Length: 268
Length: 180
Image (cartoon, rainbow over all chains, first blue to last red; front, top):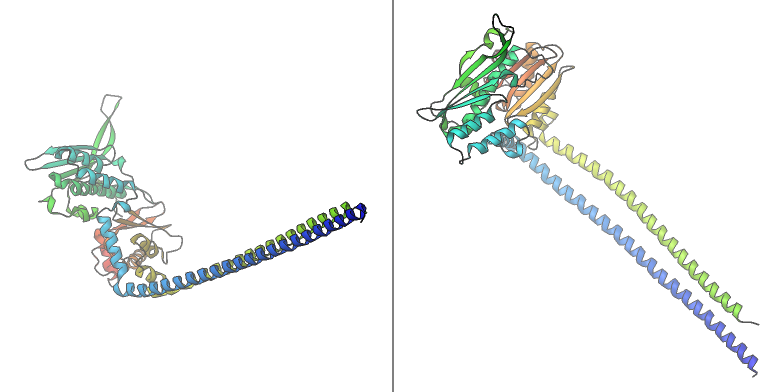
């Protein structure tokens, strides 16, 4: 064979080898891709099956929960559970559950409960602090030692009471009512948190600031005119459950000493 | 004949076939994934609608266990607290243009304010009090105030409300006497 013929044969062989290699690589590529596609299909089918099973389980759980809720609802009606739950809620409210404290007044009551148990203060200081917390802003308070225990006197200005008439007109009757309720509230709160500190009596007055001009002078003088005064002096303050007592109950128990509103309130 | 061009042609052809195989399968996988995503989305939408319908049906069936009307259902449902109950009780069959507000102060003082343009006559006030207080423990209610728009307020306080022992059966006259 001539060297030229040998070289042509080699080239032919190389060509065939490259061709075979190319075909094999393509076949391998197709094989791998088919396997990957099958895996993907299986994976997607499995995900679909899993999702369906999860949904079916969720529906079953929901149905079981619903059946239990139905039985529970039936039992709740038969037992009158709604009434009992509300009684419990009211008891929690009377016990001043902090979780139910939303308004400023409720938070103030919780603060008073803390002060009432603060043994780092002596009884008089504790009552002084409680009286300040119980009374509206701008009030004057005085704690007096008695033969047995203490008495507290509080005087609040009429202007310190917020009257929300809910769109109606605020008249003297509303002011009278709110002043009485405010006085009852101060008494109730002081006994609720101060009875254990030896509190025996609470006297509350509502006053109105008036400008007085004396004859012969050109200057006005501020004076407080007392509009309402009431006193509460229970026989044994510690024996009462002040926590469950409402302001309207205190209204029925307090002794009204002076009521200027009665004279100026128009009859409806 | 020079073998190089043929070799190059084979190599190029092989690469082209590889690219075609890759592209074809990739496209097919993408289509498969998209079809699956669409099917999943459609299935989830269907399930969501079915879930919502089932929840509605279940709620309706559960509510029916508590009573035949809206008020009974709320009164008998232990999940409704005092304020929630009062809101429903006080909002039923209100006089036209009336507005009602319910609130709680000092933990236990639940107040109801019924505001009307003109003062309600006594019999309507009595009917309103009866409707509310016959379905709830009156000890929970601190006051029911009837507010006249830009006029005086008439409040029925707890001490008066508690004078009525049976709000469902008490006479109108007895209620009016105790409260107004």
